[in-house]
Image (tube, rainbow, N blue to C red; front, top):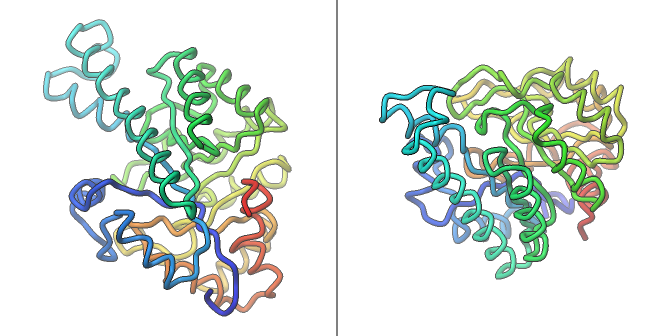
Length: 307
């Protein structure tokens, strides 16, 4: 433990090999980490991280558009083309394979908690089937990335998924703010875009990653309007220079007060950022220990039902 605090990291991106993890970071290892489980486990031991939530998201939109562009297609013009449909099907199958791998890793290492993904390109029925199947394999939540998957959180194709998650008390975590992996504007992931689903699903356990990703005012407005929404700290407080400069202590403390410490969950964004540095940032803040305990572990225990 760092300074005696229990720590749960709710934002971890694992990769099966170092080469895959390096590729996911476009070869830019900002903190020298590749994202393998073998690399992460000793870091967790050194940091004192008790549990790690593995987010099995796949950047479907990025992959589909890259494959389409090689064929000279763009956007919806590709939807009726047989070759493009085959590309879509193959890339969606990668979502299922990654989901299965994340669940398998968590079964092998009890310190991990698997969250899996679905994508509108699957079709409504297939999304529900996939989510339910992976729940039986140990998945504890769903991770969605509107920016990388290219759908707004208010997309009505996702309403059955949110209904299923709400009825089964399954938390859903979303990327919010800038899509810093590629530097794109957050066309689909500004916090204000989540108001409709939060309004229509008042019992859905929603966590907005990156605490709004720089759109602090929008995120704080959501926190004030919807009691069920929470936020994780990944990237929000301490960021790599590849994204933006870290916030000062005064700025971080102001955000914690605005959100309320009871609404924030610690996330490292491994391997883009270093778990030890991220956890130390929280423990070193001049805030009350009770607030540190909430952020570092107790909120995750409550919101995600972890021990």
